[in-house]
Length: 224
Image 1 (cartoon, rainbow, N blue to C red):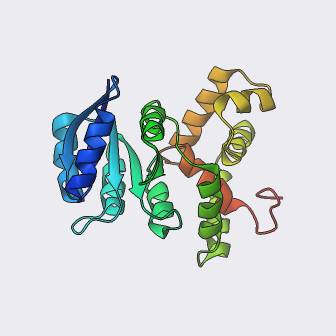
Image 2: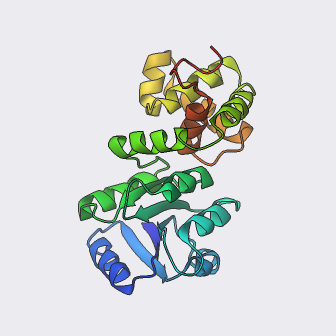
Image 3: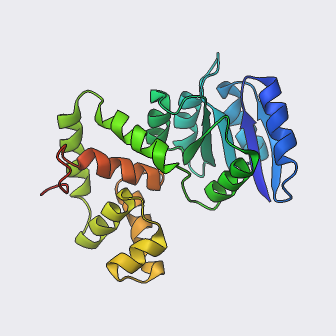
């Protein structure tokens, strides 16, 4: 069973999500929270696999809650909710360690599928929305200093780890990376795990964002 914690300040939204997820025989909504401040205690008590987190809440917002939660050892995955896919908070949530996000008008079957994907350790990012997020991140101030800092971090990787990181940045799955780099799938998984550990990152989304930050404005590969 995939254990899910719902976090949203709107009781109607929570009730709708609980009802919808109740139709999936492999998902169990173990608890609900109306504020990000309730998340740490509920996670400790119920040990969910995934936290379905709203962003905008009147108390502790979902961004702050995500950042604090993902900084903890053994934290569950976080799948954030948002109304607008241009919301700058979403990009910040991904940097904080969220595994992805859903729009609140996402069809029920896709929400269920996204929870399963995130619980399995893979990110959930719509390609169209990802492009807009990347454009938004690139448009932030301080691009030059961020690019230099990102390149310095990528320089900590070995040549093969760097190749894998660049492939993750292009949005390739482990199987696609294995084929493109002529590596065994377990080897790719090992490289991804080492990249996360060496760069102190939470998930593949953060690897992709780091690669994006290190890429010059002209699109040439980092360090070229």
